[in-house]
Length: 182
Ligand SMILES: [Zn+2]
Image 1 (cartoon, rainbow, N blue to C red):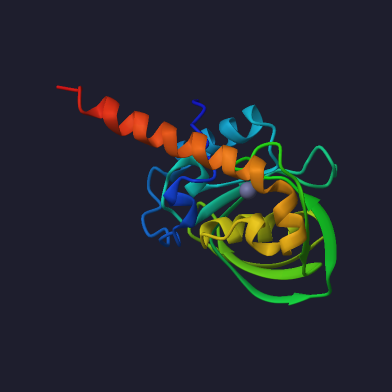
Image 2 (cartoon, rainbow, N blue to C red; image 1 turned 90 degrees about the vertical axis):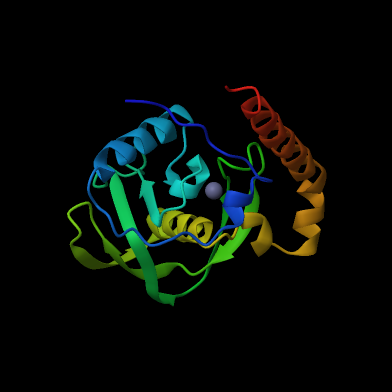
């Protein structure tokens, strides 16, 4: 088990459209590490590019809010239909301490693969549908900050800029450290 580094707003991988998973061999170790990371960070969802990996995969666990739920893994997920609308205050592990009221469809149908490569189609609503849409957005390079109006965005802009500056500085630090590895 290992906890991975969660990348923050400003890291270019968060703006990448992630590549489909084709090789399912040895995926479970990475998925285990993602769960360790998500629990450590106290999140309910995590996308692969949030830990710096360009792969169309995300995990969700809302079991603490709903006893019928369980930890879930979604690979190559695609929303095939949606219905209704709701507003919910969302947070994001890549934009820490910022929450935004995001409007999204209330119910979705998702096509996805599991770790055994098997395809599923399932309908989701409520918190699970909300979390899935947030994570699918991540894998398409979209962040919650893109989905709110100018008024909401301007309220959090200085906080978001601070996160971005720290993130860019960290990337620079890492790449300059690498020069001294012989
Ligand atoms: Zn997020």
